[in-house]
Image (cartoon, rainbow, N blue to C red; front, side):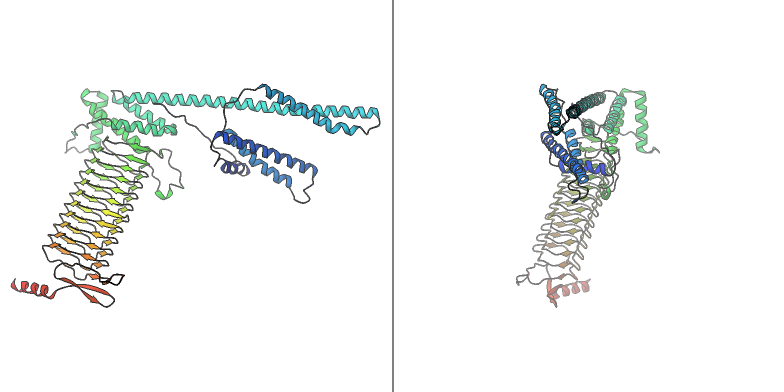
Length: 603
Protein backbone atom coordinates (compact mmCIF):
# COMPACT_ATOMS: atom_id res chain seq x y z
CA UNK A 1 0.00 0.00 0.00
CA UNK A 2 1.36 3.41 -0.91
CA UNK A 3 0.92 6.79 0.61
CA UNK A 4 0.31 10.04 -1.15
CA UNK A 5 3.05 12.54 -0.65
CA UNK A 6 2.12 14.91 2.13
CA UNK A 7 3.03 18.51 2.32
CA UNK A 8 4.01 20.20 5.53
CA UNK A 9 3.23 23.90 5.52
CA UNK A 10 4.26 26.40 8.11
CA UNK A 11 2.75 29.81 8.45
CA UNK A 12 4.93 32.48 9.87
CA UNK A 13 5.27 36.21 9.88
CA UNK A 14 5.22 39.31 11.95
CA UNK A 15 2.39 41.49 13.14
CA UNK A 16 1.20 44.74 11.59
CA UNK A 17 2.26 45.93 8.17
CA UNK A 18 4.27 42.81 7.29
CA UNK A 19 1.31 40.51 7.86
CA UNK A 20 -0.98 42.79 5.83
CA UNK A 21 1.53 42.95 2.99
CA UNK A 22 1.66 39.16 2.78
CA UNK A 23 -1.96 38.26 3.42
CA UNK A 24 -3.94 40.74 1.32
CA UNK A 25 -2.29 40.14 -2.06
CA UNK A 26 -2.07 36.43 -1.42
CA UNK A 27 -5.80 36.14 -0.71
CA UNK A 28 -6.70 38.29 -3.71
CA UNK A 29 -4.46 36.53 -6.21
CA UNK A 30 -4.23 32.86 -5.20
CA UNK A 31 -8.01 32.58 -4.99
CA UNK A 32 -8.15 32.26 -8.77
CA UNK A 33 -4.59 31.36 -9.72
CA UNK A 34 -4.80 27.63 -9.30
CA UNK A 35 -2.37 26.19 -11.80
CA UNK A 36 1.41 26.58 -11.53
CA UNK A 37 1.85 28.12 -14.95
CA UNK A 38 -0.83 30.70 -14.24
CA UNK A 39 0.81 31.43 -10.92
CA UNK A 40 4.17 31.97 -12.60
CA UNK A 41 2.64 34.25 -15.23
CA UNK A 42 0.86 36.34 -12.63
CA UNK A 43 4.03 36.45 -10.56
CA UNK A 44 5.92 37.86 -13.57
CA UNK A 45 3.28 40.55 -14.07
CA UNK A 46 3.29 41.48 -10.39
CA UNK A 47 7.10 41.59 -10.29
CA UNK A 48 7.15 43.90 -13.32
CA UNK A 49 4.46 46.10 -11.82
CA UNK A 50 6.40 46.30 -8.57
CA UNK A 51 9.57 47.31 -10.44
CA UNK A 52 7.69 49.99 -12.36
CA UNK A 53 6.24 51.40 -9.15
CA UNK A 54 9.67 51.41 -7.51
CA UNK A 55 11.15 53.20 -10.55
CA UNK A 56 8.38 55.81 -10.58
CA UNK A 57 8.81 56.39 -6.84
CA UNK A 58 12.54 56.97 -7.34
CA UNK A 59 12.05 59.35 -10.28
CA UNK A 60 9.41 61.39 -8.46
CA UNK A 61 11.48 61.57 -5.33
CA UNK A 62 14.54 62.68 -7.33
CA UNK A 63 12.80 65.30 -9.41
CA UNK A 64 10.30 66.38 -6.77
CA UNK A 65 7.83 67.45 -9.46
CA UNK A 66 4.59 66.17 -8.02
CA UNK A 67 5.09 66.55 -4.29
CA UNK A 68 3.80 70.10 -4.42
CA UNK A 69 0.46 68.76 -5.69
CA UNK A 70 0.20 65.39 -3.93
CA UNK A 71 2.16 65.01 -0.68
CA UNK A 72 4.13 61.81 -0.13
CA UNK A 73 3.56 60.49 -3.65
CA UNK A 74 6.75 58.45 -3.46
CA UNK A 75 5.69 56.88 -0.16
CA UNK A 76 2.31 55.92 -1.62
CA UNK A 77 3.98 54.26 -4.60
CA UNK A 78 6.35 52.38 -2.31
CA UNK A 79 3.42 51.03 -0.24
CA UNK A 80 1.71 50.02 -3.49
CA UNK A 81 4.85 48.23 -4.72
CA UNK A 82 5.39 46.23 -1.51
CA UNK A 83 2.17 44.12 -1.75
CA UNK A 84 2.85 43.41 -5.43
CA UNK A 85 6.37 42.23 -4.64
CA UNK A 86 5.13 40.12 -1.71
CA UNK A 87 2.39 38.53 -3.81
CA UNK A 88 4.88 37.80 -6.60
CA UNK A 89 7.26 36.14 -4.12
CA UNK A 90 4.43 34.08 -2.64
CA UNK A 91 3.31 32.87 -6.05
CA UNK A 92 6.90 32.10 -7.07
CA UNK A 93 7.23 29.91 -3.98
CA UNK A 94 3.95 28.12 -4.65
CA UNK A 95 4.75 27.59 -8.33
CA UNK A 96 8.33 26.54 -7.73
CA UNK A 97 9.78 23.96 -10.06
CA UNK A 98 13.19 22.32 -10.41
CA UNK A 99 15.89 24.94 -10.98
CA UNK A 100 16.95 24.84 -14.67
CA UNK A 101 20.66 24.86 -15.57
CA UNK A 102 22.36 28.11 -16.61
CA UNK A 103 22.19 28.36 -20.38
CA UNK A 104 24.64 30.15 -22.70
CA UNK A 105 22.25 32.94 -23.55
CA UNK A 106 22.02 33.83 -19.85
CA UNK A 107 25.75 34.65 -19.96
CA UNK A 108 25.31 36.69 -23.14
CA UNK A 109 22.40 38.55 -21.54
CA UNK A 110 24.48 39.32 -18.42
CA UNK A 111 27.41 40.70 -20.46
CA UNK A 112 24.95 42.66 -22.59
CA UNK A 113 23.40 44.20 -19.47
CA UNK A 114 26.84 45.27 -18.20
CA UNK A 115 27.80 46.72 -21.58
CA UNK A 116 24.46 48.50 -21.87
CA UNK A 117 24.96 50.11 -18.46
CA UNK A 118 28.42 51.35 -19.46
CA UNK A 119 27.23 52.62 -22.85
CA UNK A 120 24.13 54.39 -21.49
CA UNK A 121 26.15 56.10 -18.78
CA UNK A 122 28.78 57.33 -21.21
CA UNK A 123 26.19 58.30 -23.84
CA UNK A 124 24.43 60.54 -21.33
CA UNK A 125 27.48 62.08 -19.67
CA UNK A 126 30.07 62.36 -22.50
CA UNK A 127 28.30 65.18 -24.44
CA UNK A 128 28.38 67.29 -21.28
CA UNK A 129 32.17 67.74 -21.74
CA UNK A 130 32.05 69.14 -25.27
CA UNK A 131 31.61 72.75 -24.09
CA UNK A 132 34.77 72.61 -21.91
CA UNK A 133 37.47 74.62 -23.71
CA UNK A 134 40.39 73.68 -21.49
CA UNK A 135 41.76 70.43 -22.89
CA UNK A 136 43.29 69.39 -19.61
CA UNK A 137 40.06 69.92 -17.72
CA UNK A 138 38.06 68.19 -20.48
CA UNK A 139 40.36 65.16 -20.31
CA UNK A 140 40.02 65.00 -16.55
CA UNK A 141 36.20 65.15 -16.77
CA UNK A 142 36.09 62.46 -19.43
CA UNK A 143 38.26 60.22 -17.28
CA UNK A 144 35.73 60.67 -14.50
CA UNK A 145 32.94 59.77 -16.93
CA UNK A 146 34.75 56.57 -17.89
CA UNK A 147 35.21 55.64 -14.23
CA UNK A 148 31.51 56.38 -13.60
CA UNK A 149 30.45 54.20 -16.54
CA UNK A 150 32.68 51.38 -15.38
CA UNK A 151 31.20 51.74 -11.89
CA UNK A 152 27.69 51.50 -13.36
CA UNK A 153 28.70 48.36 -15.23
CA UNK A 154 30.22 46.97 -12.06
CA UNK A 155 26.98 47.71 -10.20
CA UNK A 156 24.95 45.81 -12.79
CA UNK A 157 27.43 42.95 -12.56
CA UNK A 158 27.13 42.94 -8.79
CA UNK A 159 23.34 42.79 -9.09
CA UNK A 160 23.65 39.82 -11.44
CA UNK A 161 26.05 38.19 -8.96
CA UNK A 162 23.50 38.69 -6.16
CA UNK A 163 20.80 37.12 -8.31
CA UNK A 164 23.02 34.12 -9.06
CA UNK A 165 23.81 33.77 -5.36
CA UNK A 166 20.12 33.89 -4.53
CA UNK A 167 19.44 31.30 -7.23
CA UNK A 168 22.12 29.01 -5.83
CA UNK A 169 20.76 29.40 -2.29
CA UNK A 170 17.21 28.81 -3.49
CA UNK A 171 18.29 25.65 -5.31
CA UNK A 172 20.09 24.45 -2.19
CA UNK A 173 17.01 25.08 -0.02
CA UNK A 174 14.77 23.24 -2.48
CA UNK A 175 17.14 20.29 -2.61
CA UNK A 176 17.31 20.18 1.19
CA UNK A 177 13.54 20.40 1.49
CA UNK A 178 13.03 17.64 -1.08
CA UNK A 179 15.58 15.45 0.66
CA UNK A 180 13.90 15.97 4.03
CA UNK A 181 10.48 15.35 2.52
CA UNK A 182 11.64 12.13 0.84
CA UNK A 183 13.23 10.97 4.08
CA UNK A 184 10.03 11.78 5.97
CA UNK A 185 7.91 9.84 3.48
CA UNK A 186 10.28 6.87 3.58
CA UNK A 187 10.16 6.86 7.37
CA UNK A 188 6.35 7.04 7.35
CA UNK A 189 6.13 4.25 4.79
CA UNK A 190 8.48 2.05 6.80
CA UNK A 191 6.57 2.62 10.02
CA UNK A 192 3.27 1.98 8.29
CA UNK A 193 4.50 -1.20 6.62
CA UNK A 194 5.94 -2.52 9.87
CA UNK A 195 2.73 -1.78 11.78
CA UNK A 196 0.56 -3.50 9.17
CA UNK A 197 2.83 -6.54 9.25
CA UNK A 198 2.48 -6.65 13.02
CA UNK A 199 -1.30 -6.75 12.68
CA UNK A 200 -0.93 -10.01 10.80
CA UNK A 201 1.09 -11.63 13.57
CA UNK A 202 -0.37 -14.69 15.34
CA UNK A 203 0.70 -13.22 18.69
CA UNK A 204 -1.74 -10.83 20.35
CA UNK A 205 0.99 -8.74 21.98
CA UNK A 206 2.56 -8.00 18.58
CA UNK A 207 -0.83 -7.09 17.13
CA UNK A 208 -1.35 -4.68 20.02
CA UNK A 209 2.02 -3.10 19.25
CA UNK A 210 1.01 -2.69 15.62
CA UNK A 211 -2.18 -0.86 16.62
CA UNK A 212 -0.34 1.51 18.92
CA UNK A 213 2.26 2.13 16.20
CA UNK A 214 -0.51 3.07 13.78
CA UNK A 215 -2.06 5.35 16.38
CA UNK A 216 1.25 7.16 16.93
CA UNK A 217 1.82 7.44 13.20
CA UNK A 218 -1.62 8.94 12.68
CA UNK A 219 -1.01 11.46 15.45
CA UNK A 220 2.25 12.66 13.87
CA UNK A 221 1.26 12.34 10.18
CA UNK A 222 -2.15 14.01 9.68
CA UNK A 223 -2.14 13.40 5.92
CA UNK A 224 -2.23 9.62 6.50
CA UNK A 225 -4.93 9.52 9.18
CA UNK A 226 -7.70 8.36 6.85
CA UNK A 227 -5.51 5.51 5.61
CA UNK A 228 -4.76 4.46 9.20
CA UNK A 229 -8.46 4.60 10.10
CA UNK A 230 -9.21 2.45 7.06
CA UNK A 231 -6.62 -0.14 8.16
CA UNK A 232 -8.01 -0.35 11.71
CA UNK A 233 -11.56 -0.63 10.36
CA UNK A 234 -10.44 -3.38 7.99
CA UNK A 235 -8.95 -5.29 10.94
CA UNK A 236 -12.26 -5.05 12.82
CA UNK A 237 -14.13 -6.25 9.74
CA UNK A 238 -12.19 -9.51 9.70
CA UNK A 239 -14.31 -12.59 10.54
CA UNK A 240 -14.46 -13.03 14.28
CA UNK A 241 -16.45 -15.10 16.76
CA UNK A 242 -16.49 -13.69 20.31
CA UNK A 243 -15.65 -16.16 23.07
CA UNK A 244 -18.33 -17.19 25.50
CA UNK A 245 -18.45 -14.98 28.58
CA UNK A 246 -17.50 -17.24 31.48
CA UNK A 247 -17.82 -14.53 34.12
CA UNK A 248 -19.91 -16.00 36.98
CA UNK A 249 -23.11 -14.12 37.62
CA UNK A 250 -22.30 -13.99 41.35
CA UNK A 251 -18.82 -12.54 40.67
CA UNK A 252 -18.64 -9.31 42.73
CA UNK A 253 -16.25 -7.73 40.19
CA UNK A 254 -17.72 -5.84 37.26
CA UNK A 255 -17.96 -7.95 34.13
CA UNK A 256 -15.54 -5.75 32.14
CA UNK A 257 -12.94 -5.88 34.93
CA UNK A 258 -13.22 -9.63 35.17
CA UNK A 259 -12.80 -10.05 31.42
CA UNK A 260 -9.76 -7.77 31.46
CA UNK A 261 -8.19 -9.80 34.28
CA UNK A 262 -8.74 -13.02 32.35
CA UNK A 263 -7.25 -11.51 29.18
CA UNK A 264 -4.15 -10.28 31.05
CA UNK A 265 -3.61 -13.77 32.42
CA UNK A 266 -3.96 -15.13 28.91
CA UNK A 267 -1.44 -12.66 27.53
CA UNK A 268 1.13 -13.47 30.20
CA UNK A 269 0.77 -17.25 30.03
CA UNK A 270 0.24 -17.41 26.27
CA UNK A 271 -1.85 -20.60 26.29
CA UNK A 272 -3.24 -21.65 22.91
CA UNK A 273 -6.78 -21.96 24.21
CA UNK A 274 -6.62 -18.36 25.41
CA UNK A 275 -6.18 -16.93 21.91
CA UNK A 276 -9.87 -15.91 21.62
CA UNK A 277 -9.62 -13.88 24.84
CA UNK A 278 -6.38 -12.30 23.71
CA UNK A 279 -8.07 -11.28 20.47
CA UNK A 280 -10.80 -9.62 22.54
CA UNK A 281 -8.20 -7.28 24.01
CA UNK A 282 -6.74 -6.52 20.59
CA UNK A 283 -10.16 -5.64 19.21
CA UNK A 284 -11.03 -3.57 22.27
CA UNK A 285 -7.82 -1.62 21.69
CA UNK A 286 -8.70 -1.05 18.04
CA UNK A 287 -12.18 0.16 19.03
CA UNK A 288 -10.74 2.47 21.68
CA UNK A 289 -8.22 4.00 19.26
CA UNK A 290 -10.96 4.80 16.77
CA UNK A 291 -13.30 6.18 19.42
CA UNK A 292 -10.64 8.28 21.16
CA UNK A 293 -9.42 9.98 17.99
CA UNK A 294 -12.84 10.46 16.41
CA UNK A 295 -14.33 12.10 19.50
CA UNK A 296 -15.04 15.84 19.43
CA UNK A 297 -16.03 17.09 22.86
CA UNK A 298 -16.59 20.71 21.78
CA UNK A 299 -20.20 21.94 22.06
CA UNK A 300 -21.82 22.13 18.60
CA UNK A 301 -22.19 25.91 18.82
CA UNK A 302 -18.44 26.33 19.47
CA UNK A 303 -17.03 24.04 16.79
CA UNK A 304 -16.55 26.88 14.29
CA UNK A 305 -14.94 29.28 16.74
CA UNK A 306 -12.96 26.93 19.00
CA UNK A 307 -10.04 24.88 17.63
CA UNK A 308 -10.36 21.12 18.13
CA UNK A 309 -8.26 19.07 20.50
CA UNK A 310 -4.96 17.82 19.06
CA UNK A 311 -6.12 14.29 19.74
CA UNK A 312 -9.19 14.66 17.50
CA UNK A 313 -8.84 13.47 13.89
CA UNK A 314 -11.27 15.64 11.98
CA UNK A 315 -13.04 14.74 8.75
CA UNK A 316 -12.67 10.95 8.98
CA UNK A 317 -14.84 8.25 7.41
CA UNK A 318 -15.32 4.85 9.01
CA UNK A 319 -16.41 1.63 7.34
CA UNK A 320 -17.28 -1.13 9.81
CA UNK A 321 -19.75 -3.05 7.70
CA UNK A 322 -20.07 -6.68 8.83
CA UNK A 323 -17.72 -5.96 11.75
CA UNK A 324 -18.13 -7.55 15.17
CA UNK A 325 -17.76 -4.86 17.83
CA UNK A 326 -17.31 -5.84 21.44
CA UNK A 327 -17.71 -2.73 23.59
CA UNK A 328 -18.33 0.14 21.22
CA UNK A 329 -18.32 3.51 23.02
CA UNK A 330 -18.63 6.32 20.48
CA UNK A 331 -20.10 9.07 22.61
CA UNK A 332 -19.38 12.56 21.18
CA UNK A 333 -17.99 10.88 18.08
CA UNK A 334 -17.76 13.04 14.96
CA UNK A 335 -17.35 11.53 11.48
CA UNK A 336 -18.27 12.57 7.97
CA UNK A 337 -19.58 9.16 6.95
CA UNK A 338 -20.22 5.96 8.84
CA UNK A 339 -21.07 2.48 7.59
CA UNK A 340 -22.21 -0.07 10.19
CA UNK A 341 -24.32 -2.16 7.82
CA UNK A 342 -24.70 -5.76 9.03
CA UNK A 343 -22.39 -4.99 11.97
CA UNK A 344 -22.87 -6.89 15.21
CA UNK A 345 -22.63 -5.17 18.60
CA UNK A 346 -22.15 -7.91 21.19
CA UNK A 347 -22.54 -5.59 24.19
CA UNK A 348 -24.20 -2.21 24.83
CA UNK A 349 -23.24 0.31 22.15
CA UNK A 350 -23.15 4.03 22.85
CA UNK A 351 -23.49 6.75 20.22
CA UNK A 352 -24.70 9.42 22.65
CA UNK A 353 -24.08 12.98 21.36
CA UNK A 354 -22.41 11.60 18.25
CA UNK A 355 -22.51 13.64 15.03
CA UNK A 356 -22.73 12.16 11.54
CA UNK A 357 -22.27 14.91 8.95
CA UNK A 358 -22.76 12.53 6.02
CA UNK A 359 -24.66 9.30 5.39
CA UNK A 360 -24.99 6.95 8.36
CA UNK A 361 -25.60 3.32 7.44
CA UNK A 362 -26.93 0.87 10.06
CA UNK A 363 -28.70 -1.32 7.53
CA UNK A 364 -29.24 -4.76 9.03
CA UNK A 365 -27.10 -3.97 12.09
CA UNK A 366 -27.61 -6.25 15.11
CA UNK A 367 -27.49 -4.84 18.62
CA UNK A 368 -27.54 -7.75 21.05
CA UNK A 369 -27.82 -5.34 24.00
CA UNK A 370 -28.79 -1.68 24.43
CA UNK A 371 -28.28 0.82 21.62
CA UNK A 372 -27.82 4.38 22.87
CA UNK A 373 -28.19 7.32 20.45
CA UNK A 374 -29.27 10.00 22.92
CA UNK A 375 -28.81 13.56 21.56
CA UNK A 376 -27.12 12.15 18.45
CA UNK A 377 -27.19 14.27 15.28
CA UNK A 378 -27.66 12.77 11.82
CA UNK A 379 -27.17 15.47 9.18
CA UNK A 380 -27.19 13.24 6.12
CA UNK A 381 -29.38 10.28 5.17
CA UNK A 382 -29.77 7.71 7.94
CA UNK A 383 -30.46 4.04 7.36
CA UNK A 384 -31.69 1.67 10.08
CA UNK A 385 -33.53 -0.62 7.69
CA UNK A 386 -33.94 -4.16 9.04
CA UNK A 387 -31.79 -3.30 12.06
CA UNK A 388 -32.41 -5.36 15.20
CA UNK A 389 -32.10 -4.17 18.79
CA UNK A 390 -32.49 -6.94 21.35
CA UNK A 391 -32.84 -4.65 24.35
CA UNK A 392 -33.43 -0.88 24.67
CA UNK A 393 -33.14 1.51 21.72
CA UNK A 394 -32.55 5.01 23.07
CA UNK A 395 -32.97 7.96 20.66
CA UNK A 396 -34.18 10.65 23.09
CA UNK A 397 -33.38 14.13 21.77
CA UNK A 398 -31.81 12.81 18.57
CA UNK A 399 -31.88 14.98 15.44
CA UNK A 400 -32.44 13.51 11.99
CA UNK A 401 -31.83 16.32 9.49
CA UNK A 402 -31.98 14.14 6.40
CA UNK A 403 -34.29 11.35 5.29
CA UNK A 404 -34.47 8.52 7.81
CA UNK A 405 -35.32 4.88 7.26
CA UNK A 406 -36.39 2.50 10.05
CA UNK A 407 -38.34 0.24 7.70
CA UNK A 408 -38.70 -3.33 8.96
CA UNK A 409 -36.50 -2.54 11.94
CA UNK A 410 -37.11 -4.61 15.09
CA UNK A 411 -36.77 -3.39 18.67
CA UNK A 412 -37.47 -6.13 21.19
CA UNK A 413 -37.01 -3.95 24.25
CA UNK A 414 -38.18 -0.43 25.03
CA UNK A 415 -37.84 2.09 22.20
CA UNK A 416 -37.48 5.75 23.13
CA UNK A 417 -37.72 8.68 20.69
CA UNK A 418 -38.77 11.29 23.25
CA UNK A 419 -38.15 14.77 21.88
CA UNK A 420 -36.57 13.42 18.69
CA UNK A 421 -36.59 15.77 15.69
CA UNK A 422 -37.15 14.49 12.17
CA UNK A 423 -36.67 17.36 9.72
CA UNK A 424 -36.60 15.05 6.71
CA UNK A 425 -38.93 12.28 5.68
CA UNK A 426 -39.19 9.42 8.18
CA UNK A 427 -40.02 5.85 7.21
CA UNK A 428 -41.04 3.37 9.92
CA UNK A 429 -43.10 1.16 7.64
CA UNK A 430 -43.18 -2.47 8.71
CA UNK A 431 -41.15 -1.77 11.86
CA UNK A 432 -41.81 -3.95 14.92
CA UNK A 433 -41.71 -2.56 18.45
CA UNK A 434 -42.16 -5.39 20.90
CA UNK A 435 -41.68 -3.40 24.09
CA UNK A 436 -43.11 -0.04 25.14
CA UNK A 437 -42.46 2.76 22.66
CA UNK A 438 -42.22 6.48 23.31
CA UNK A 439 -42.51 9.19 20.65
CA UNK A 440 -43.59 11.84 23.13
CA UNK A 441 -42.94 15.43 22.00
CA UNK A 442 -41.28 14.16 18.84
CA UNK A 443 -41.50 16.51 15.85
CA UNK A 444 -41.85 15.36 12.25
CA UNK A 445 -41.35 18.39 10.00
CA UNK A 446 -40.67 16.47 6.81
CA UNK A 447 -43.17 15.87 4.04
CA UNK A 448 -44.11 12.41 5.27
CA UNK A 449 -43.90 10.29 8.41
CA UNK A 450 -44.73 6.74 7.42
CA UNK A 451 -45.74 4.09 9.97
CA UNK A 452 -47.60 1.86 7.51
CA UNK A 453 -48.05 -1.67 8.82
CA UNK A 454 -45.86 -0.92 11.83
CA UNK A 455 -46.48 -3.16 14.84
CA UNK A 456 -46.54 -1.84 18.41
CA UNK A 457 -46.92 -4.88 20.63
CA UNK A 458 -46.47 -2.90 23.84
CA UNK A 459 -47.80 0.49 24.79
CA UNK A 460 -47.19 3.33 22.34
CA UNK A 461 -47.02 6.93 23.54
CA UNK A 462 -47.15 9.76 20.97
CA UNK A 463 -48.33 12.38 23.45
CA UNK A 464 -47.48 15.94 22.38
CA UNK A 465 -45.93 14.90 19.07
CA UNK A 466 -46.22 17.13 15.99
CA UNK A 467 -46.62 15.95 12.40
CA UNK A 468 -46.16 18.82 9.95
CA UNK A 469 -46.55 16.69 6.86
CA UNK A 470 -48.51 13.58 6.11
CA UNK A 471 -48.78 11.09 9.01
CA UNK A 472 -49.44 7.66 7.55
CA UNK A 473 -50.46 4.89 9.97
CA UNK A 474 -52.41 2.74 7.49
CA UNK A 475 -52.50 -0.86 8.57
CA UNK A 476 -50.55 -0.18 11.77
CA UNK A 477 -51.22 -2.52 14.70
CA UNK A 478 -51.31 -1.33 18.31
CA UNK A 479 -51.38 -4.22 20.76
CA UNK A 480 -51.26 -2.16 23.96
CA UNK A 481 -52.32 1.29 25.02
CA UNK A 482 -52.08 3.77 22.10
CA UNK A 483 -51.90 7.31 23.40
CA UNK A 484 -52.09 10.25 20.99
CA UNK A 485 -53.13 12.89 23.52
CA UNK A 486 -52.29 16.42 22.44
CA UNK A 487 -50.82 15.35 19.10
CA UNK A 488 -50.93 17.96 16.31
CA UNK A 489 -51.54 16.68 12.79
CA UNK A 490 -50.94 19.59 10.40
CA UNK A 491 -51.08 17.46 7.28
CA UNK A 492 -53.29 14.50 6.54
CA UNK A 493 -53.57 11.94 9.35
CA UNK A 494 -54.20 8.54 7.81
CA UNK A 495 -55.20 5.68 10.15
CA UNK A 496 -57.11 3.68 7.53
CA UNK A 497 -57.35 -0.06 8.38
CA UNK A 498 -55.30 0.51 11.53
CA UNK A 499 -56.02 -1.94 14.36
CA UNK A 500 -56.17 -0.84 18.01
CA UNK A 501 -56.36 -3.86 20.30
CA UNK A 502 -55.88 -1.93 23.54
CA UNK A 503 -57.29 1.46 24.53
CA UNK A 504 -56.86 4.22 21.94
CA UNK A 505 -56.78 7.73 23.31
CA UNK A 506 -56.72 10.87 21.10
CA UNK A 507 -57.91 13.39 23.68
CA UNK A 508 -57.11 17.06 22.91
CA UNK A 509 -55.48 16.09 19.60
CA UNK A 510 -55.68 18.61 16.72
CA UNK A 511 -56.41 17.49 13.17
CA UNK A 512 -55.71 20.52 10.98
CA UNK A 513 -55.72 18.44 7.82
CA UNK A 514 -57.96 15.51 6.93
CA UNK A 515 -58.45 12.84 9.62
CA UNK A 516 -58.98 9.44 8.06
CA UNK A 517 -60.00 6.37 10.08
CA UNK A 518 -61.75 4.47 7.28
CA UNK A 519 -61.82 0.75 8.03
CA UNK A 520 -59.98 1.14 11.35
CA UNK A 521 -60.70 -1.39 14.12
CA UNK A 522 -61.01 -0.33 17.77
CA UNK A 523 -61.22 -3.40 20.00
CA UNK A 524 -60.46 -1.50 23.18
CA UNK A 525 -62.06 1.78 24.31
CA UNK A 526 -61.59 4.69 21.87
CA UNK A 527 -61.58 8.24 23.21
CA UNK A 528 -61.53 11.42 21.10
CA UNK A 529 -62.50 13.85 23.84
CA UNK A 530 -61.94 17.57 23.12
CA UNK A 531 -60.41 16.81 19.75
CA UNK A 532 -60.31 19.65 17.20
CA UNK A 533 -61.16 18.84 13.57
CA UNK A 534 -60.21 21.62 11.16
CA UNK A 535 -60.47 19.45 8.05
CA UNK A 536 -62.75 16.64 6.93
CA UNK A 537 -63.03 13.62 9.24
CA UNK A 538 -63.78 10.15 7.94
CA UNK A 539 -64.71 7.18 10.14
CA UNK A 540 -66.33 5.19 7.32
CA UNK A 541 -66.53 1.44 7.98
CA UNK A 542 -64.66 1.88 11.25
CA UNK A 543 -65.44 -0.83 13.79
CA UNK A 544 -65.86 -0.04 17.50
CA UNK A 545 -66.22 -2.80 20.07
CA UNK A 546 -67.03 -0.12 22.65
CA UNK A 547 -68.96 3.06 22.03
CA UNK A 548 -66.46 5.75 21.02
CA UNK A 549 -66.22 8.89 23.13
CA UNK A 550 -66.15 12.24 21.32
CA UNK A 551 -67.41 14.46 24.11
CA UNK A 552 -66.16 18.02 23.79
CA UNK A 553 -64.82 17.47 20.27
CA UNK A 554 -65.45 20.38 17.91
CA UNK A 555 -65.32 21.14 14.22
CA UNK A 556 -63.80 24.51 13.33
CA UNK A 557 -65.11 24.65 9.74
CA UNK A 558 -68.56 23.50 8.67
CA UNK A 559 -68.09 24.75 5.11
CA UNK A 560 -65.17 24.58 2.71
CA UNK A 561 -63.25 27.72 1.65
CA UNK A 562 -65.20 27.53 -1.63
CA UNK A 563 -68.49 27.76 0.27
CA UNK A 564 -69.54 24.10 0.00
CA UNK A 565 -70.53 21.77 2.78
CA UNK A 566 -67.56 20.16 4.61
CA UNK A 567 -67.95 16.41 4.19
CA UNK A 568 -67.59 14.30 7.34
CA UNK A 569 -68.28 10.66 8.18
CA UNK A 570 -68.70 10.27 11.93
CA UNK A 571 -68.93 7.14 14.08
CA UNK A 572 -72.44 5.74 14.63
CA UNK A 573 -74.76 7.82 16.86
CA UNK A 574 -72.54 10.93 16.60
CA UNK A 575 -73.29 14.13 14.65
CA UNK A 576 -72.34 17.80 14.52
CA UNK A 577 -74.45 20.51 16.09
CA UNK A 578 -73.71 23.98 14.69
CA UNK A 579 -72.85 26.71 17.19
CA UNK A 580 -72.36 30.46 16.71
CA UNK A 581 -69.13 31.43 14.95
CA UNK A 582 -69.38 28.95 12.09
CA UNK A 583 -68.17 26.03 14.18
CA UNK A 584 -69.81 22.89 15.44
CA UNK A 585 -69.63 20.51 18.37
CA UNK A 586 -70.04 16.77 18.32
CA UNK A 587 -72.90 15.30 20.30
CA UNK A 588 -74.45 11.92 20.67
CA UNK A 589 -77.92 11.14 19.34
CA UNK A 590 -80.91 11.05 21.69
CA UNK A 591 -81.59 7.43 20.80
CA UNK A 592 -78.09 6.44 21.86
CA UNK A 593 -78.44 8.37 25.10
CA UNK A 594 -81.79 6.68 25.86
CA UNK A 595 -80.28 3.34 25.03
CA UNK A 596 -77.46 4.02 27.48
CA UNK A 597 -79.99 5.01 30.16
CA UNK A 598 -82.03 1.87 29.63
CA UNK A 599 -78.92 -0.20 29.79
CA UNK A 600 -77.98 1.46 33.08
CA UNK A 601 -81.49 0.85 34.55
CA UNK A 602 -81.39 -2.79 33.56
CA UNK A 603 -78.07 -3.20 35.29
